[in-house]
Image (cartoon, rainbow, N blue to C red; front, side, top):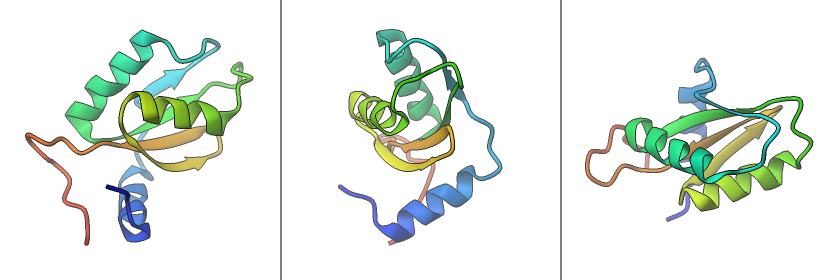
Length: 98
């Protein structure tokens, strides 16, 4: 399933006022980071992640790798933040527009 433009806009609107729930510092993507992201996605479905200024990695590549590792959709990259979405198949919280 891929997200439509309308669905991405809806998810972005939910995250505008939210603070980043996960911070990525100097290190790259670790197993612990992937596990923490998966658990947060299971609980919240959509999360904002901030990449600290001391991380020199390519932000787009980092976001894409983490999304793939968590089997999530990359919704948006803006500044040093990005938004991931993964539907909770057992107890969905967010109803996406058609």
